[in-house]
Amino acid sequence: MRLASMIPVAVAALVGGLLVGSCDTGDGAVDHERSMPGQTAVQVERLTVRVVETLPHDPTAFTQGLEMAHGMLYESTGVPGRSTIRAGRPGTPPARRAKLPPPLFGEGITVMGPTLWQLTWRNGIAIERDAGTLAELRRVPYEGEGWGVCHQRHRGRLVTTDGTSRLVFRDPRTLKKRGEAAVTTQGRPVGRLNELECVGDVVYANVWPTDRVVRIDSRSGAVTGDIAVPSLLNEAERRHADVLNGIAAVPGTEQFLLTGKWWPRMFRVVFVPAGGDS
Image (tube, rainbow, N blue to C red):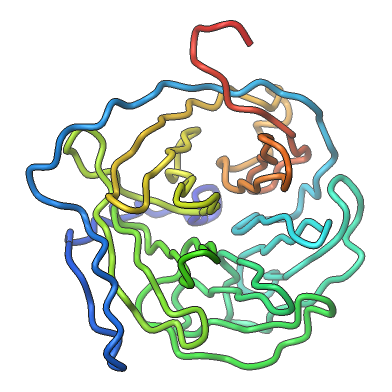
C-alpha cells in the first residue's frame, strides 16, 4: 500500500507479532476463531488469472480499496491531499466523489448496506460514510495502522489488516477488536497483507508489494490458494504505474476486478489453475 515509487527511502518491513488467540471486546463478546498450533498443513492451490474484460481506470488514482456493492464500484485512494472516495459504474468516470482533507491518507473500504467504512493509514481514525452520497457521518478512533478491510455479514464482523500477517476481526459498529488469526501457508507466516475482499468465510488479500493474491480461510488463517498475477500492463504503462492493489468480487459471478496504484486499466478476471487449461 505504501508510496513505493514516491518516497525515496527504504521501507521497513512491517512484520507484526503473531498474537494468535481470542480477544475480549470489552462488552463481553469474544471471537474464539483463531489459528491453532500444530494444525494439519493445508494443501495450497496454485492459481493464476484469465482476463475476461479490460476496462479503463483513472491513472491518477493511488488505489487503496476496491469493492462492488449496489451495482456500483467503490474505490478509495491514498496520498495526503489527494486521497478520495469514489463510486460509479466499473470502467466509467465516478458518479460521486469525496475528498479527504490533509493529512488524511485514505486506505481500505467496505460497504455495509446504507453505510461504508473508509480506513486511514496512520491517522488513527476510520470514517463512516453514507454509501449513497459518500458524505461523512462520523469519525471513530482506530488503533494501529489501517490497511485493508472487508465485511463478513454472515458473521457480523469486519476483517482488517495492518500490514502484518494478521487478520483482525472487529465489531462493525464500534471497530473494537474481537479477535484475530495468524495467516500462514504450510505453517509459515504470510506478511504484508494489504487490500481485502470477503467472500463468505474466504478472504482474498493482496500481498504488498507483489503481484500476488492469497486466498485465506478466515476460520483458521490458513492460506488455501496462492494466486500469481501475471503482468497485466504493457511496458510503457508499467513505467508510470505502481504495484497491484485492488480486488473486488463481482456479485453473482466467480469474477473479480483487479487494478493497482496509478494503473490506467482495470481487469475483470477469473482465477484458474496455474499451468492448466484456461
